[in-house]
Image 1 (cartoon, rainbow, N blue to C red):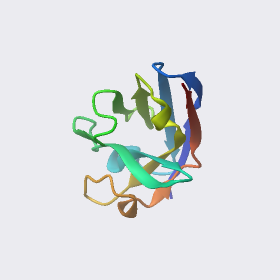
Image 2 (cartoon, one colour):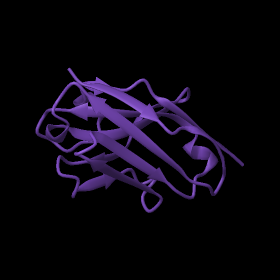
Image 3 (cartoon, rainbow, N blue to C red):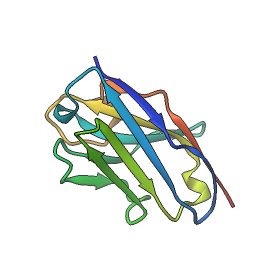
Image 4 (cartoon, rainbow, N blue to C red):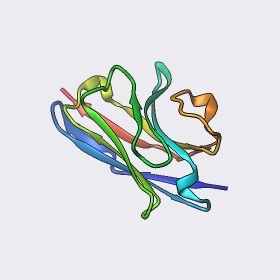
Length: 124
């Protein structure tokens, strides 16, 4: 069983940056594909970014391409989401997720383990 704990959310002005971190415990971190999702009251949970087991392959939602970067440090059991040029539309609760399945996906249905979420608010 994998436990995930996110940190790094907060309030930032439009154009600013934040770095989210997700610390994993209870499993072999390097055997899980990791992803970041976000959700607002008006929108379904959206897969923002995913990184493969070794960290050398990533994929992003079109809405964040060129602004967000996902990375992982398998030695520290941590996955990161660097968010630059933030926009008010990025305001959401951000969740990290893990899957032991051999796949590379931004679909919420493919992930078994979830963190509790961290709130990001971008003011205009």
